Length: 222
Image 1: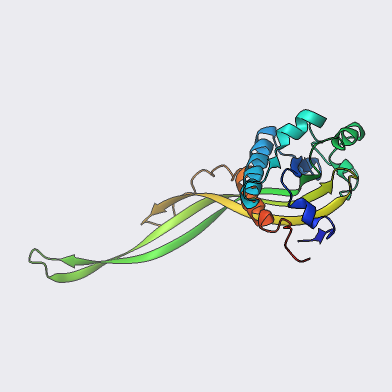
Image 2 (image 1 turned 90 degrees about the horizontal axis):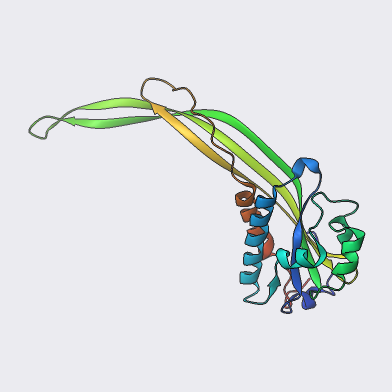
């Protein structure tokens, strides 16, 4: 956890007070497709609803239906909700039924591929027809693995809708890998084609789990 306004912590715990407002990129290099964006936010909403024990979480689709879609790339300072909303959207947001808006800001996305080699040594007893062990077969298995990685870094920012002021912030980062292997007993085989990297939604699933565990609670001491 990076920051919290202790005066708002009890209010955050009330039903129906938090809306998941959207996901924006810190810069154009971190842009997320609309499909992935929707998947990330839907999963986050579900986690928050479970964390809050059935208390209402207003989804991003309801918020966007009221004020319009948030910026795809943030603008200005993250200290204000205007980082994610245009001036006209800010005016509409003050009239929204929720009290706090949660915005996800993706600061870094890295995708890369590499190849690794490993080997393992094995042995297997050899038996004659009578079941007696008469020897042992030894061999080495050589493995070549092609890997595709995606790492991400994001901030989860909570704003007071009436003022646009940031009242809580938490950051998270995570990396996941997809791999594909080829094996041989006769030396290292050529690397197989690289798989697709993990999706942004799958990587951020882990990040959202971490953040939701730290989400403000009314009875917590700060």
